[in-house]
Image (cartoon, rainbow, N blue to C red; front, side, top):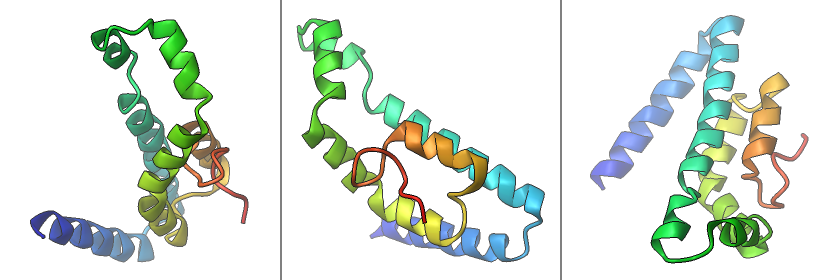
Length: 114
């Protein structure tokens, strides 16, 4: 419950700030969120975890990249955040490419065009 309060506060704060933000501030917010999506996805899929499990890192990484269940799990985990940021206009413009790279849309390909 404590964590939920912090998240709700952060969402309310972002909504309030974006309402009065300049186009440069909104562009920076989009860029930061896009980079954050890519970095978070990268952190959650580090090759070191395969090595620690005694697996061949190259084969395990390839298997993970082609695993549709893994893509669906990541997309489901990102969905609430992605939807909120999309509603706020944070996902858009040229930074949409970063969301495609992160592949956090339910279809596994990236953020759907709207």
